[in-house]
Length: 286
Image (cartoon, rainbow, N blue to C red; front, side):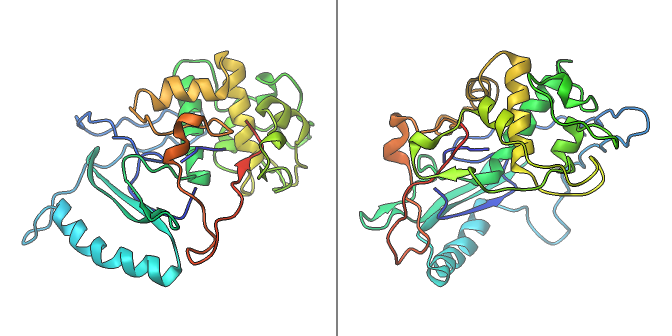
């Protein structure tokens, strides 16, 4: 899916989502509960508690990160001919370090600002789609193990070896052939609404669902359409209201074309920092 925020370089170390807003500041109160699984399935184990620093060392601090990254990042950008990027480090639910390196616009010498510069993080944004799915599972509106045809306004072709479920979609085992055609375009007029894309661009299933890992952008788009169907909201509206706004992610959006209010904060994309920026690319699904 798509979350507007153009990728020159982005280094994410234990990042919760894809961009520039503060993470939630709620402190951890203990181990997270296991995620319940249906009969015959394995439950997701609770997250381990944060480990204490080994004896003889001190806890990781911002100064430690800045000393290393201020040396490493300029070297990495120069060696890779990369325009710029952001490093964000999250520790125990709080932002321990965030800093921009290099340029959001090379020609204008506009530096990367870690709190306002927007990048396109690509498939990192799938995490927000999965978050939305699990919110609706928690509300009892979705079941990870139901045939997804029960949620759709069209039917995926059936197979004798079993249905596709949200569990297989979220583990990239839905069985779809991956295809790039119509995935990205530099022409905003070529944007395809999500419901239309889900209905009319279904790839061939080449594996039994649940049997074989096979990355699928289409399957994630299908999950986005299911979110629309079940919530009664557009995917963009749902993510805004139930994910981005609660996290105070004011410089993040799935909306395409990019809303005008974000235009000044958008980084230019470069194949190489020493070259010219290519035409802006947008996913063809809105």
